[in-house]
Length: 165
Image 1 (spheres, rainbow, N blue to C red):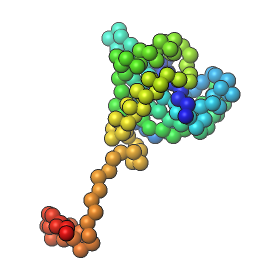
Image 2: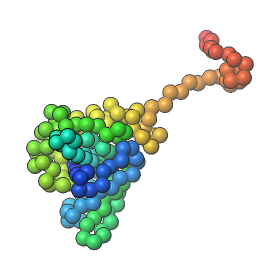
Image 3: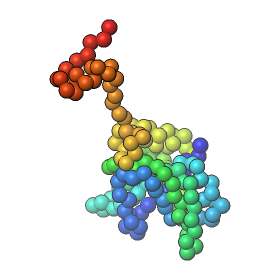
Image 4: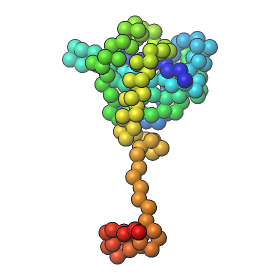
């Protein structure tokens, strides 16, 4: 599994809304390079100046399944999961490593090889599973099994417990 980083500069491009389950980004990289992302994981980070300081947030991740060309640029898109709210990663130690390696995000879409950064991204994803929006396949669901006759009693007769032997 390969991991890629895509950067969105809020001041120059449209700000990314929290949540969602289908994503894409525009790139001017060659089509052959973008093909490497198909079926892999793309992590999208946005940057915004707040009170004179750059703030970086992890917005979403997705698996590209389609590349469309339009006016010399390519739209890479596919299903994924959005963080709601976006996760501020500005002061995280792993992010500083990523920021330096990506040359202040001047490379645009770029493959990420650092195990430390990938593990940190995966931990953020896993710790935010219950906070992800618009994807009922991910949010934890609590379930209780009840024997048929007792289900009626719980719903209609006010039974509050079930004793099992």
